[in-house]
Length: 376
Image (cartoon, rainbow, N blue to C red; front, side):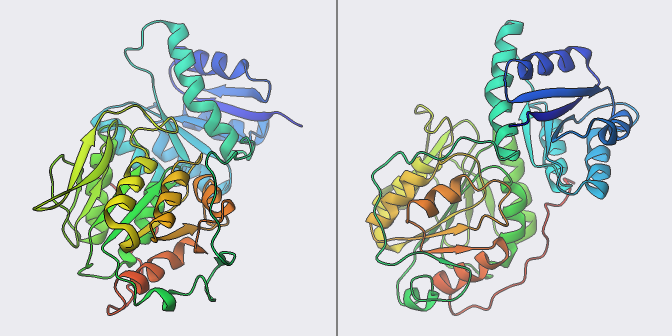
């Protein structure tokens, strides 16, 4: 099988060397070139024909945001991974880059000690994303015993098991969403289509580091008009409010006399993730049982699979995004393959399906945007 051809773009010689050394150790990947700025990168792309580009954000001549916009004009399908700093400015720029068409991002190692540790950190973060975006990810190995619905899941609109009509009479008290690679744009495209005056709380796990999740919450609020915040321990869930799990922490729920409250904690990562979708979904299943609706959107890996099993076993509902509209069909694909999805839908149809199941009295609202707006 041909190697994955990668072009590395960064104005730092040290970073270019670090990433090159990191990738050189993988037999499936070949570094076919490097560039010190976006202008050089754009000239090199037709020369070296890469399968994927890693792209720094802050560069002279043509920065990362300008470069990813230029790449998308000519190479609509070429995967781009941004190299970001874990700072306020870096977080905002990363979300802007994703909105302009970047597929994913990796944060630059900071305070990790030796060069060897930095290389290992980049290797752990970057190589799986390269292989996943270039369709070389390892096959999903289902990590739990699987229950099967009585009929196969339905792709697209139509039909008995997937039909919302059979669920309209079922009360839904919470909407739980799990998402990873491609998530910020998927959320920005889907969530404005949810019914106004949304009648239940919404809880979200998006795999992101600290700081990035706060900015994501701000952008979701901007496109939905719904109050949206990072999860805070002790906050009570209320209808029409959105809570995003804070980066670096798990978020789950507890039932109290005052209502269902958020829990935020530092338990070990699950599926190599913190926050993890499985952690939240297990709590949703335990507290809400058959009154839970869960949605798995685009993402790498299989986080959410076990959580969806818990939700189905408790009588709740599970929807997943289809492969054609997912940046990576890892998480939704694992749930669909396990037979846990009651419906498999294109991204553009998910909000309407949620409305029918959660808020059938309200009309569907057309999405306002397919990308996140720039930070103000």
